[in-house]
Length: 262
Image (cartoon, rainbow, N blue to C red; front, side):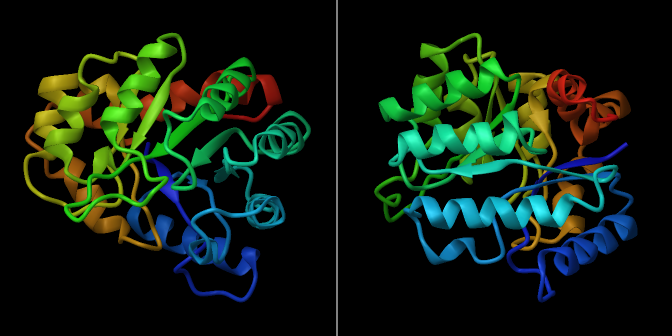
């Protein structure tokens, strides 16, 4: 069982969300991936600080993309904490009254912003999954781009809320160490170079139950990102957890709440 935490409509061929979703599923079938989590619309990179109409449109594209393949694909809502009330309204629209099962926070606001606390508390009430992009950039992060250290501070303020550290910060050795003492934080392995040793270190420092496979397709290939896990020198049972078991366990409460078959 392989569940891919980190998939995008951007960077994939197709004129419509449905065509791009079909392309993603073709790649998934080729690589033996059973389920995809999709977030951000067809042209999300046009704005690092999207206005409400923009992130609503992107969520609409995700809803449209997965609507014909609910047995294979799930979606997260993209939010911008700089528009707090509109983001809370979008949670109601997309999760409470819609088909989406979690949220994606990108680079509009750092995760130590007070608005983020309000957002994650609301999503946690709904049992939704919370994915926060993180990165360490040599030349300095974008103004609203979070690091794993900042996510760790957020996690310690809300130790009861599960969080996902997207990309493990890119610089995965620093990222693993930054969230190591935050048991409510898991790492997402997608979207950075498939360097040998990342999964072995993560299992050693965090435990296999805090690691979630993702590809970041169409920014990265499924094969290169799967190789981080399948090529790792770890027990078979740990690979099974990382490739699908951990994400399925995290999603089960909201899937049951919505009556979606796991």
